Length: 261
Image (cartoon, rainbow, N blue to C red):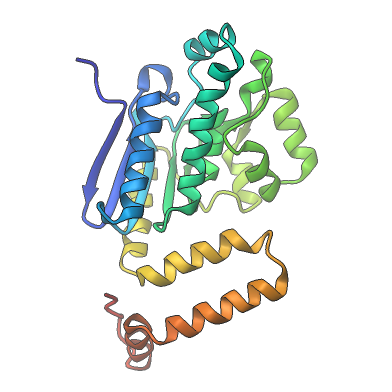
């Protein structure tokens, strides 16, 4: 029996998800897409608990995007089949963005094609200083997917995104770090340990405040200012009445570490 293409383990309050397809540099297999989507659905309906998701690729490489053998097969099929896998990836990306838990990408080695979109769909990115991203689509005559264009448009200037998309060349993550896209760089081999430290810090924080913060961030780019201000006002008023807020304020006044529920 072949190894599972997705590994899900618990490290205290942290759910660790590994794309386990190292033979193809962790290309996006149907098993991974379906498995991760099912996990996110279980978190949404409350049948799976946890405080933070840590997303990585096996054996030191984040994700190489679409599998070339699969792409070849779909290139010879009808439109519905060519479209099907992209729709599954899109639904996964949407589920990641709507997930109430923060998701941290552990970007080691590199991310290519839809793997870049997968990383950018996360809420934070911790990367090896030797890693790279690559919009490899043009090298095989296809166009970006997996959220590459909307996420990168948020993150970098149009001219630089054009270079990525038109050439398919590698871009060191150091350059993205300088533009604020990557949260932190680490030495190669230390990325996951550092990401776990950050995940545990978030897990010890007030869960509802972080969930609401993620929702507010997601809405802010497209929401009119007056509507966003109203949403912020309603959210903070509700948060102020919570046990977490009372504990956080009291702990600050007593100069101690808060113990959030």
